[in-house]
Amino acid sequence: MRKFGTKRALGGLRTAGALLATGLLAAACSSGGSSSSTTSGGGGSSSGTVDNSLALSYTGGTAGKATQSTPVRIGYVNQQYGSPSYPENTAGAKVAVQYINQQLGGLQGHPIEIVPCFVATEEDGQKCGTQFLNDATIKVVLTGTLVIGNDSLYKVLGGQKPIIIGNGLAASDFIQAGAVTYMPGAPGVISGLAKWIIDGGVGTVKTVAVVASNDAGATAAAKLIFAPALEKAGIKVTQVFISPTAQGADVASAVKAAGGGTADVFVPIVPVQGCIAVYDALKSLGIKPTVVTSGLCFGTPLIQHLGGTFPEGWYFGAYGVNYFIPPQKSIPASEQLALYQDIVKQYNPNMEYTGFAGPTFGNMLTIAQIYNKLGIDATGTQLTDAIKNFSGPQWGIPGTPVACGKISPVFPTLCVGQMGIEQFKGGKWIPIADAYNNKLINAFG
Image 1 (spheres, rainbow, N blue to C red):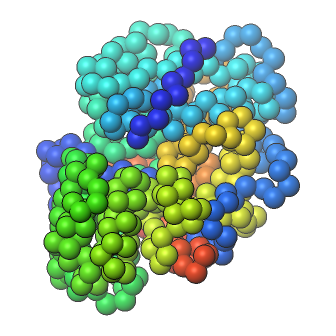
Image 2 (image 1 turned 60 degrees about the horizontal axis):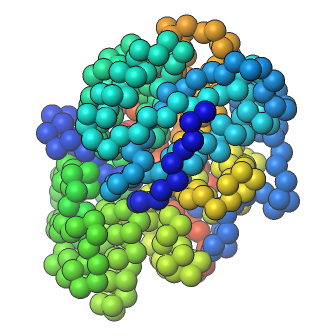
């Protein structure tokens, strides 16, 4: 198998046509949730051992190593280098493959082999699509995260091979007839945040200040999903856009211009490095607004910047369970997320395990489940039907139902439409609306 790269870089929709014109949605993906918890440690098992029964039950595998020599090849596409890039996807995929091959018996005894193809330009998407289309040994394609090359990849494959979209950000990720995504993604998270605010999640709200990155993704999320929903409900929204690399005075100036110190709610729609800059700006300005943001903000870089904790009082919207919450047996997705962290400790304890890594790990286990049910000689048609009709639950994702093509007519690729919100306060995670208190938000209901 080829070696993976290790470089690290880091609803309120008016019409589908408007999304297509802008091209991208915001990165708002990561596992989120709430319950009482300490600040910095992960939510993995306290014993330090790994109980494979949960994963064996999910995948239908057999304990032990894959024993056959012939691999099952999975096409894998990710935006790996440059800026933006999402190498944590690849880390999550690699750990999943190691785990499945070494402890879950592979796929009916056959090891998984990932065939990676990385993109940095739109032309790379066409190259990857052509490579996988012409390789008869590859019957399923999994993506990590792409903001470039999506359209050309989909046009080449054209429904001829099934695609599981890992963490969709681009508009085209959510309108493909031959693809599905088992995550609520940016549409679910951003729409869910807007709905929660409108429904009184933080009390009566008349004004909202937004600071968003001026890249196409965050701009589309702020202008086309978030703000229109709030404005339709009579809430005044002031938006200021900044460079994804903005720091210091530039960020502080944007916060002030948006009215971050006076608005009822302040919403940063930025990646984790932007969250760090916003946190520092609020501190320098001496203001403590009610902050509502996405789960990307509780990634490892922010935790490290704050010395092992999270911003006090902030609300986070994500997928409904949390990397930092001890597992609860009544919530299978939380146990699965904890097991994932234990596997990371076994195979790659220094990897970036937050962000998109966990969902990609889960997608690999779902592929294993599908192959174990159908057999490794399953046809492309059988695999396409099984992937499209997968009814879940998805590994590490508590949202139900899993119903591909039935969640939102605007986003037919979506298979899950629920998300969760939690608050970090007083050194603990507080349940707001998530799997831990059985109040997941249906973003499209």
